[in-house]
Image (cartoon, rainbow, N blue to C red; front, side, top):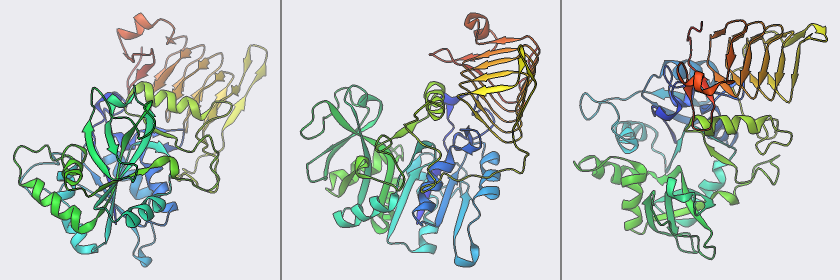
Length: 403
């Protein structure tokens, strides 16, 4: 049984999360963030998946219903589950509370083990290998850990484990992270992915629900409890190998929780030799493919040539006499004559007017950029009307009207 936690607000991704849940944020042209975890699970033949939703979930619910319809005749499903308010008229107060409010699912399914994964990371993983390691360890919970430079570990929950894999301490964002055994330059950071024995999960979740001072958080409360009981084990993500994966991609995992991390992960997709390969047919990332016509490039004059270089262009898009460089065009994007797009991500149904210039920007759905407008050229001017990230990425929200 799998529970995918998809209820986060994603405040640091604003304005991309202004009208949608973080797992529903588009990524890489056709995809949504949630497609990566669901592809990993279904590729590994896990087909009983409850997606626990909460904030602004309409877009996410629609995507799940359109895309992730597994065969009901075989008893398979991916289903969104909103807060069921089993503790009173309130939404989820934390990731542990989300599971507590849905313990009835475990009563119905009666699984031996429960996979609990997040919904908003970019990675390729075979979770069955993690399950095998979990069963072999005999632990109540197995926590997926990724090796990170110790200087970066202060941003994560950090795992201090014996060489055997048994976790002896789990600390959230420590000032002095404990290093890996035998390698003082690295630490084990929690990926927020867990596998529990079902009976252990139910016991600790019920006990936590009665604690008034608990944040009801898996990483903050549940995992430390099981560590204290000596019943937690770490799974090294570096040991996970999937078919068709290059050696460079092994261990690739990105938390795209900020505008800058989202932008950097997107730009990697269109680099000359990307670390994360969307074109791996042996472990595909699946999504809904709309029935739009193929992309089209028109006009072939010296100053008016429809072209895209080092870019991804999705179906339904038209590059009409404009130039696109190092950018991602989602479906139904139109780039009109003499426009110049560089280092940018244009989401669905964006229209770039004649002669407009767009640099290092993310433009959300249904935005029309007027002719001759400049975006990303003068950041001081852009900060007065748009969101600009720490690294100078200009972000324009869904349906915003520009003039």
